[in-house]
Image (cartoon, rainbow over all chains, first blue to last red):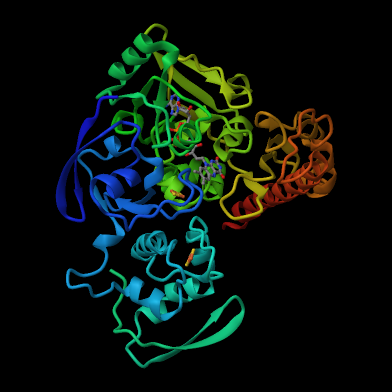
Amino acid sequence: MTELTVRLTVNGETVEQTAEPRMTLADFLRERCGLTGTHLGCEHGACGACTLLVDGVAVRSCLMFAVQADGLSVTTVEGIAAADGTLSPVQAALRDCHGLQCGFCTPGFVMSITALLRDNPTPTDEEIREGLSGNFCRCTGYQGILAAVRVPLLTAAPGDVRSYENGGREISQTFRVTGGTSD
Amino acid sequence: MKPAPFEYHRPGSLDEATALLAELGDEAKVLAGGQSLVPMLSLRLAYFDHVVDISRLTELRGVTAADGYLRVGAGTTETAVGADLDVARAVPLLTRATPLIGHFQIRNRGTLGGSVAHADPAGEYPVVALTLDAEIEAVSAAGGHRVIPAADFFTGLWSTALEPDELLVGVRFPVWGARSGFAVEEFARRSGDFAVAGAGGGVALDADERVARAAIGLLGLGSTPLRASGAEAAAVGQRADELDAAELGRLAMSGLEDVPADLQGSADYRIRVGAAMVARAWAAASNEAIGQRAAVGARP
Ligand SMILES: Cc1cc2nc3c(=O)[nH]c(=O)nc-3n(C[C@H](O)[C@H](O)[C@H](O)COP(=O)(O)OP(=O)(O)OC[C@H]3O[C@@H](n4cnc5c(N)ncnc54)[C@H](O)[C@@H]3O)c2cc1C
Ligand code: FES
Ligand code: FES
């Protein structure tokens, strides 16, 4: 099959590569761009591991062909931390709340949470659960991930102790990372 | 790479798209949001020599109000439908059904036209279209523009009245008058999954508090979305506040012929769930209709 040229912006940089039309955007990023942060779990839209932003909108990169992203701007998990490696508030909160174990699902969660908090900076518990229902985690049992999304944590200063309700239980957590609001 | 090889086409206009479909015939498949088609290609449940990508055709997007109906362009994403204020005002059932579709990442790309054309019997938009007696607009290079009533559109499991060279361009949803209420209720094992069973309903009342119009749609209870016409007929003419919603739910389940049975649940289980969902949807819709009258009457 003939390969087509795909020109797009990935994490702010222009990329030009060829791809067969049937190559998904996820495979393109991993195999053509060497960006293996985008993970593939199910490859048919169910698990959310491959979530990334296309023109700022959170989508499944296993359900889009690379040729469809021609001319568009893609943000992967590699584009979320600062250039010097400082974690984004979402990433830092996930680390601090034990929101990951094996880490396989984490890139997808980082992208979904980043989009979720950008569009709704003060989500309710229910909105968080609904917003993350499209991302599967086989390790954590989700409680640490839910805790990481809690806005009080994301806006806290280091050393702050925040209490919040999660699943009907009162939980206290000491905040250890530098605070900051979600971008 | 999972899907079988195909040739990719991205027409720049609606005319180009229909010309391509006319030329390629049934070797071509339309790609909209890809949220149903790409999984099928990746699982190799389907393959096509040509894929015609319409996802960038801006002329297929948008919501327009017309006399008596609201038209939603086929390429309007589910996210855009769910957020549209005109949709919320004129066709609230569509707004309320939207969050039940998959997850926000799916809705960001999935389109109303794709969902209706895909015609999943458990899909929310197909059942809303059927319940509200929507009309589906199709265009082809050979046949021009035609309008298909939703009642004639869903012909079988994942099959519709669309011809291979036809593009679904929009869906017209009738706008119901004042004193009407709408609700959709469904049960899924996990949030975002296709429902085990569900129901959508619309109720309109007359000046005597009686049901002037009743629409009850069923999802996940056959090979297509369905209407519970027996239950609808039983409700019309009755006083809304005297109707037994549970009884309507049971009635809506009578005569169902091909209720699916799979790992999610047996046919019997689906029928029990379906009856409960009809009862809930009916109660919510008729309460909304009754409440509207009271609110109007309360105005000085
Ligand atoms: C994890 C997951 C969960 C989901 N959950 C739900 C759910 O709960 N409820 C639900 O309803 N849906 C669900 N979906 C499906 C989703 O709603 C799809 O977006 C929708 O069914 C198809 O829309 P699309 O634009 O993505 O179409 P595509 O996938 O691009 O196309 C679907 C079919 O329609 C045809 N088609 C598309 N547009 C046109 C057109 N304009 N004219 C003619 N033919 C056309 C295509 O050729 C194809 O056969 C889910 C999907 C996933 C991946
Ligand atoms: S790999 Fe894309 S959703 Fe699972
Ligand atoms: S941390 Fe292992 S799958 Fe989520």
